[in-house]
Length: 197
Image (cartoon, rainbow, N blue to C red):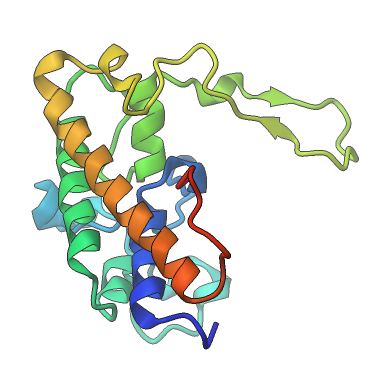
């Protein structure tokens, strides 16, 4: 870790917030991953996750509420990362202003939002019968969904909203390529990966 530059570390944090494979979800159980403020999203402050010390024994030692956005303030993000935040915010606003997505709230994470846009039903994930089974207990797939990618988003959103998503994919790709290059420069990769994801 000491060999990783602060810029690479910060870029990786920004990228991880908006990569759906990371699976940060606020559905069912709050995990407090919310990168945007109430002002950003246009909601009341109490509609967003803030972890109060009394809410959970694990965090009982906190002297004040833990807010993930305060945690993010310690990092100086690169222009590429800032551009990703800006374009991701447009997707969050699109989601919250669109009546076709049901059971939404202002705490929903990027993963929750991509599931809704794809039409993925989380209750359809397959469960293995044995509780003692050592394999992964849930099978998650995009099969049967509209997809959430540069080539499939046109099946999930109306054409008038496509520029929001294309801008997001462009900015995420730019940051991913930068991280890829930084990993090579840090000696953590021998060559730049052709598949940046």
